[in-house]
Image (cartoon, rainbow, N blue to C red; front, side, top):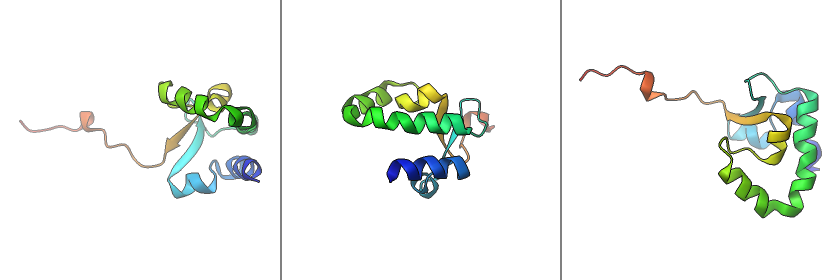
Length: 94
């Protein structure tokens, strides 16, 4: 049920219910909306990741972009909808 929910909702809206609640969405590495093939691939790999969940968590922690194997294989990333607070672009009067 979870796999079906995540796959279908990400195909339709680019996010699952949980991602919507937390202001996240799935996109391709270049920022474009993830297509059907990418969504299917990233979600099908959840089945392979489930039995080795501790390894997947460790891999995510050491991945530069905090991606799981499904995201790496599908060239996708989960991003926040919130605008970045980039202080380096702000001018300060010193």
